[in-house]
Image (cartoon, rainbow, N blue to C red; front, side, top):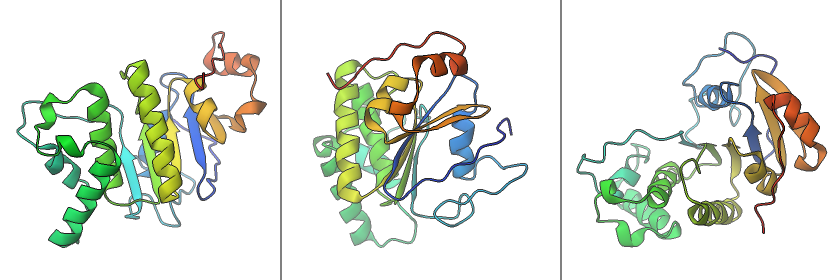
Length: 221
């Protein structure tokens, strides 16, 4: 694993933003949390269990693989995220509930292949949320989404977080996006360079981490 010296604790209900340069290990960090990457040393606990063991973790990977030609309906794609132990009535309740909450109920019987970028991100978020997780991991969920869809997606995400009392970890290439919404920021470039409140990090510190000048923008206005 390319990461070393990462020591982080996520508090219940916290929104942690993960930022850092390309190739710095942000995606590897999330993959380690869900058990897709093994740690060479040290210990990882996710909701008190080893990675990959807890059913209460939702994961939205970066650019989820999806063949637009595959004849899957939106409802079917969402149902792929369900735990196998559920009965049909409970499964239907969860699928109907999450697609309604994400504003894509009108797309339920449409082919997933025809969705726009913003609709597709809501679809994959629904697939991650349908298992009713306590912890949600998102890897670059707004990549390739236009400005209007970005604001809508982030607003929806925060609304769902509040209603479901979710803990969130979101990786983003855009420091300004996560610094506007997350309570804490972790800057990862193979090791942990900063972990704290967004208000505590300076443009100079970001420039050291990224190797280039960084500009703060406020996405709330």
